[in-house]
Structure formats: structure tokens, C-alpha cells
Image (cartoon, rainbow, N blue to C red; front, top):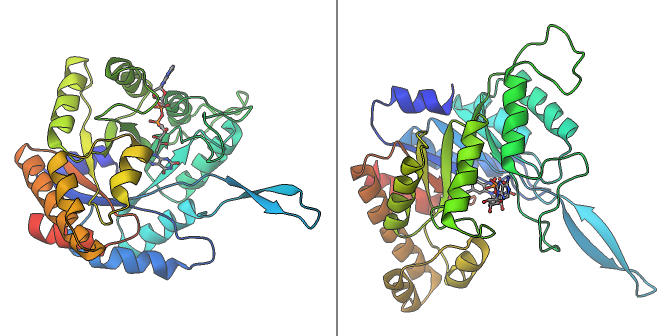
Length: 318
Ligand code: FAD
């Protein structure tokens, strides 16, 4: 079932969902099931599975020269989605990127999803590869997520890259896209970022999931601005509980989001990461309760493969 139908069927009740990462190459599917099992009692209507593009690593050769190697550390997004749908009978949502994909790769990826009975897809540009500063598309790929959304929408009309294909079956994907309550790190202004978000919706996206935020006012202001600009689709808040002291520096740097002073100071005072985890859980419970009161359709948790703190939050909130 489509995300938009899940939201409609919930009749205004806030639903619990979460996102998982494929395991590192070499681990098996039980690693994923072990992180999902404890969360199934909260009846997620769908589970997102992230996509991880290739990275470059450099190996030192005997002669001292460096050899560039291309590796994908977390493959398996599509297989995991199929396994989740099969085992739990909930919708699994694969993330799909512009980065690393040609248009033909994209089309073939979508064909696989269609055959597997996957109805939803989260369309993203992806970041620059780790060793580069700026995002570079493939030669025959997409530069922005809006171009990717357009390709998926065309397939939903039965239009494949080979225009001469006759009597095609249209796909029927519900398309989600990313939104940034504190603006995307590359965007010159919030206004321009919302302008391009609107473009993704015009091309066929029917819901938005936000980047993590730690101050609900950032989300409320963002939603208000989106509505003023004419965006009417559901805007699902994404939440992540802090779990380690290191994240105080890593999260603002990596995701370009601010951490409120009160939260930072509580974490600074913690003696160890066990205490940080508890602060993160309590902060996230308070955020969740306020968002539910405001009537959000879904609370989407970034689990990062760790379910114990998400379970502690969901137990208090749902
Ligand atoms: P876009 O919507 O293309 O926007 C990128 C930037 O370009 C923005 O600054 C925007 O304002 C600007 N822009 C857009 N269109 C135009 C235009 N036509 N002209 C000029 N500027 C334009 N990354 C992964 O690698 N794997 C994942 O699974 C993944 N999942 C995510 C899930 C969520 C909910 C979120 C919020 C992010 C996720 N990301 C993931 C990270 C995401 O790929 C990065 O944030 C990426 O840098 C931007 O992706 P986007 O789809 O928002 O890009």
C-alpha cells in the first residue's frame, strides 16, 4: 500500500515508522531482523531502507603508490526490502539516489521494485562521494532529485527510456522526497530550498520526510513556510535520539542541523554514553509528544540499526 494511503487510513492518528541501514557487507539478514523485531509491536505501516553508494578507498602498493578502489560497504537495499515485506507483511520503502545511477540503472532498479510488489520509493540526490567536495552526477544520470522524480513519474505513465516500447505496463510508485527544516547545507537560502522542494512535488512526489531536527520550532516554521508556498502534501518529521557524546560535533557538521543549548549542556554534563543515551531518549520523547499533539501524520525515527533506544521512546509515546 502507498504511504499516502496509510496516512489516509489512519484517520488523523499519528503512526510510528522508522528507517534502517543495510548491514555492512559480510553480515547477514538476521542482523536486520534482530533490529526490526523489537519494534514490530508498535505496528509500523512502513519501514524505510537507506541506499549507500560506492566509496573510494586508497590501498598502498608495495612500491609506495596508492591504488584507488571502488567499494560499496552497505549493498543490499532492494533485497532487504523484499525480505522485510516477505517476513513482516509491512511495506518496505527503498531509497534510490541520483548519485552512482545512470538513467538506465534507475529504470532497471524501478523495474525490479515493480516485480517485487514494492509500491513506494524515496527519491534522493545523494551526497558527494566521501573524497569529493561537490556532488557529481553520472554522465547519463540525474543532477537533482527533481529529475529523478520526473523519471519515476514517467514510468508511472508507462513511458520507458526506449520510446519505441509499445503496450507497456505503467508502474504505480508513490514517491517520497527529502525536506530540510534547517535548509539543505548547499542551499543558499531557505526560500530557494523550498522552491526546489516544490519542484519535486510538481514533478510527482506525494509526501516529504524531513531531515532530523532537535527543536520542534524548526519543523513547525518549515511546515508553515511550505504551506505558504503552496506545498500541500504530508510532511513527515524525522527524529533521531542522540546516543553518544561524539554526535554533539558529528551531527551539526554532517547534517547541518543545530542542537539546542539545553540539550547540548545536558549531554556535556553526562559522565558516559549510557547517560547520553538516556538524555537522548528523554529529549526525543518530549519532541515526539509535542509533535503528536500538533497532529503530525507519522513520526519517522532514524534508527541507524539500533532499536533499543527507539523502542524505549515508542513505548512512552505510542
Ligand atoms: P535535492 O532535492 O536534489 O537538493 C539538493 C540541493 O540542490 C539543495 O540544496 C537544493 O536546494 C538544490 N537544488 C535542487 N534542485 C535544484 C535546481 N534545479 N537548481 C539548483 N539547485 C537545486 N542519502 C543517501 O546517500 N542515502 C539515503 O538513503 C538517504 N536517505 C535520506 C533520507 C532523508 C529523509 C533525508 C532528509 C536525506 C537522506 N539522504 C540519503 C541524504 C541526501 O541524499 C542528501 O541530503 C543530499 O545532499 C540531498 O538530497 P536531496 O534529495 O534532498 O537533493
